[in-house]
Image (cartoon, rainbow, N blue to C red; front, top):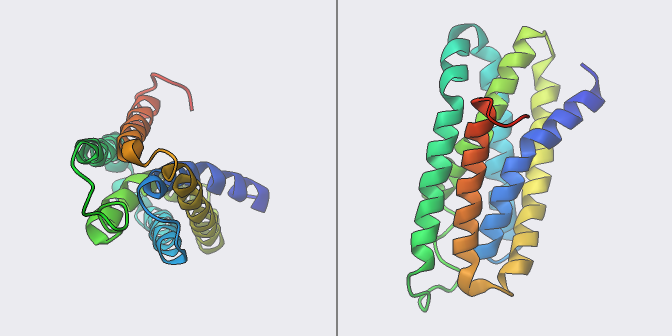
Length: 189
């Protein structure tokens, strides 16, 4: 597999993480710390899931392909619904736009946005692609695009702060629905 093909795959895989990063930016300041946290979580999980998929390919192919879209859909829908509910709460006590970017928020989001990377890792094993360079490329591309996503979301968040969580929650649910419909064959890839 060529580096161009791997870069294109990395870009495609990072789109969900980028969209979620934009949503996080709607709610959080685009400080270097927040951008780094989001970028590291999403980049590392994309890297790790691609590698894990590669090494687990022979053991779990059937199980992952049957349920990966349902897991991503459930996680994104749950987190989106939670953001929508929080959008109707009083924000007076928020000094950073709401919930922190801690493990409770970031791990489920990182898992949900990297499930496809797990499946790609399995595919890489099946077509004998060297995994280390491919997984590193996927992780770096996702890291960079996620940081940019937080910045973009933060720029818009300052203009629409009262409805940022609502918009972010709706986007997360729509991403979950898109993943589900793609994997069910209702819409094309």
